[in-house]
Image 1 (cartoon, rainbow, N blue to C red):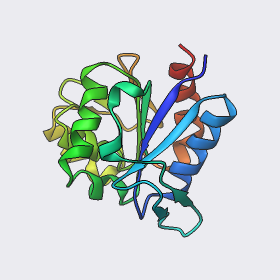
Image 2: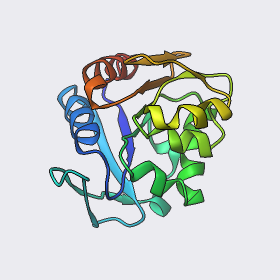
Image 3: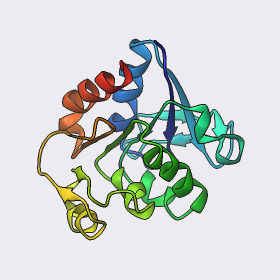
Length: 172
């Protein structure tokens, strides 16, 4: 059954952490909606490879319209977490136990949403202490699946495992 996946993304996203999961989700028949501050805008990856057209502005969407959330890494999540609208959007998915996929620096949005307490998770090594302060049990593993809801990975090298586990949750 096809699912609708929200992607919170802005400039300086880690290219492959956006392109590879999005490609995998679309290949599996899922719909992907890119969300930033305003629809129609173009954002670019930090490697200059990904050029992403924003489908919807954050004020045009409701988390209840979506089945899952993808938060790719790079500098994108750090920028987005400065805006309470993106933090609240993220928090709804965690509170309602909808699938959330966060890689590399992606968990920064989860930290700001105060949604990691009591969760097993991973992320890029530079945010390990931040994740622990937020109450997460940090695991240095290629992919961590917590409570059949949260999928986290550390770096682009972990993308095969990240995509595999994310697709498993989307298939449910």
